[in-house]
Amino acid sequence: MISEVGVPSYWYLITRFGEAQNLLPAALWVCLALVRAEATRPLGYRWLLGLALVALLDTASKVAFIGWGMGVARWNFTGFSGHAMFSAAVYPLLMTTLTARLAPVWQRVALGCGFALAALVGVSRVMVDAHSVSEVVLGLLLGSAVTLLAILQAGLPQVVWRLYVPVLLGVWMVVAPLVAPPLPTHWMVTRLALLLSGHVRPYTRLDMLRGARRKTPPVHQPQPIAPG
Image (cartoon, rainbow, N blue to C red; front, side, top):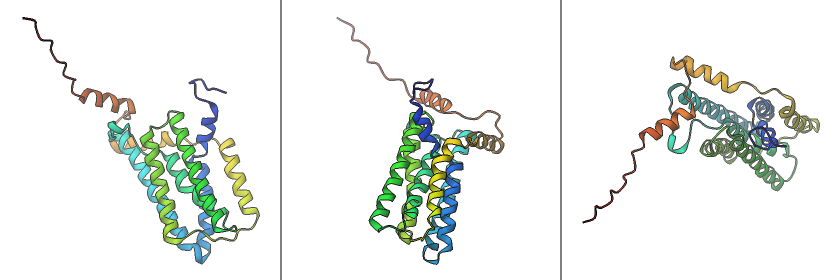
């Protein structure tokens, strides 16, 4: 099935798996489980702190562009991709924690699958024309840093789940993107940016690219040599 703009509709479904309102409840549940156990408490605190910091950085980058036009035209960068960032920060550790009963090798497989899913969400953001490649790549790097730094400092999670917990989390992660209404996060960030900047009109990607073209010096064309 193809959408009206020629993009296969499954990309719009995949991109919903990176929405914060679907990922953050699952992340909070996992974080609470990590914090409750003494052995995994440092991992939970580091992960939660990192997640909060990159969420603030992601929001700040978008507010800076929408409110003041602070982007990088050469990279076509207007702010980190929040979908890519949240996916890379949540899915790998979520899957690793849910497989904590298994051998470490399977936890590493789950970690890799989490990063692969995050990368797929990132590709979907480019395919639906929501973000540029640079915004997705930097978002993925930002989120991946949260996961990797937490695990490198505190090790793989060792949490003993009751069987119903991974089942409920799995159902939530599959069903929520299908039925939960999307939150107007872009509208909220835009309102915040205009409130802080005092401007009445948000800066857009088109404004940035037009400005970059105006600043590009004209290409010197060699003049033909007159005969004689």
